[in-house]
Image 1 (spheres, rainbow, N blue to C red):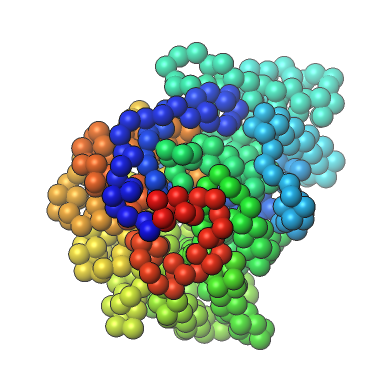
Image 2 (cartoon, rainbow, N blue to C red):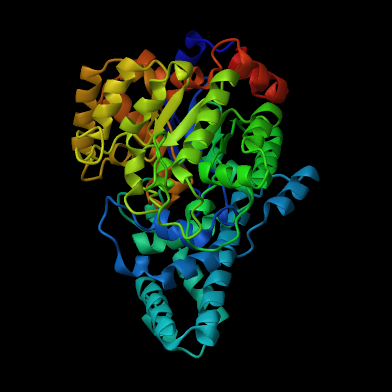
Length: 548
């Protein structure tokens, strides 16, 4: 079975890993041993999201950095949408390919595909803006395209006689050109010849045109391997109910089927997905006569999923919703706060009864409505965890480590840093964990916040030693694909933990996998372990991880 001894053996040294990507250079990932876990990742593609609403409310409006005015415009968002939907397979198409035995494409082919899809999206955006935009919108589109050409050192391109397709092809070639000299490590996306957050976001949109299986293979190629991450727990997304844009996105039932097929057929790592649950959709399902927990039940009991993902900042509190909940929605159901509480209560009770953990977004971001990003405050979860019937609930509060989110005493129960609230909760609630997803302040030593965040983390661990029993490694890939340094994320986090924070090997082993196995309920006999054995027991890595 999975044991502390088995995991701890591999925590010395590093190994060179050939990382897939645009330049294909090697990155030195740490050797972690059997059972290393990435508890926070995503493999959704552009079809799985309401693209414009997601980009506007989730990706572009980062509350922690000054906004780039061009990146907040509808024109830029429409460009990204045109890219994200260029050549991007639907869940039905991909499931048919997987059932027919198709595997992952080679990384060179994927890089070329990204480039081609970006070129197609740019050309479509340019033609649409010329043919159907208003004069004002056409002007905004031209400003975005002019900036793209200027940042790619081709300002005269837009005045040429080339067709939109020819211009787009040239821009895409320049966008993916590599060879930047300087002090960047091999395999770092900062090796692109031309670089900026504006350009990197466009490349990230190109990444999301890949098949989900290819995204899983890319994630594994970045951080996985025999001495590296062996277990990934990608979370699905179901955000559309809270967004004001009327857009199509892959239904959660279809996401479950294609992700289950990936978990069943991908041999490079053990894939243990989390299913998304949206309480607003649950309220509407119940009103329409549909059983609100049907997708969660199906995913966990029949399709190899191991947990549930919640996004409170989209518009709801973990419990205690009221007349203000969803009050910006044009089609808000009557008595929504009470109904959402009822659906969440039913979910929590089901998870406790079936030994299923929950991961909740706990960063002040992804706010779909006015001030709803505050609903991510860990303090709101106390009212859930204080219920005697929910004492057995295991909860991962995701996105630890910025130390820049402070509650307002007038609005919230906590007025200190959210990390300090979390530290206090660890001592009071045995089932509370937290992950390091998107912890770029620590992973990137060039971050201006690096020293501050490391010191604050050291102080928190000193005050709350139990934190090292609840801290879990997570990448939040593919979201960190927007960061030029994302290929070095695993190595950077491990370096901060073992070097800057000087964690002992046994404590490091806990953060890099053992704590996650406890959170998942896979370090012991029980309903969760039985389900995983039944669905994943034939996987080539199952015996290596659980019966070394």
